[in-house]
Length: 73
Image (cartoon, rainbow, N blue to C red; front, side, top):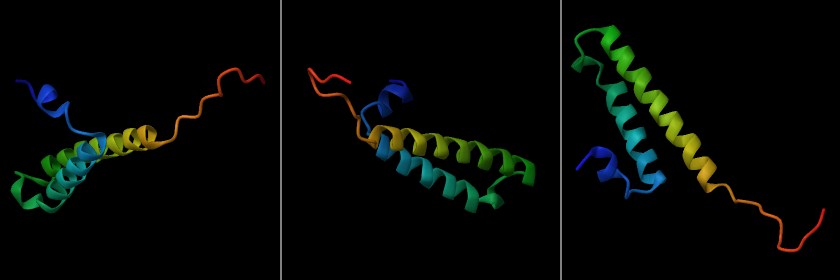
């Protein structure tokens, strides 16, 4: 089972919560990296993932406005 398949059953909001938790863990765990550059790279990747998930969650949560059936402009 791949990770994509394993996580495909979660909601976007669960993915966002995980991305936030991952970012915070990386941000607070600078002492776990070999050097400051490695930490900065990991933190930047986690930030981009978190922001991508946030944008996706916001777009999926936004109400979809469709014209009513038979409506004319």
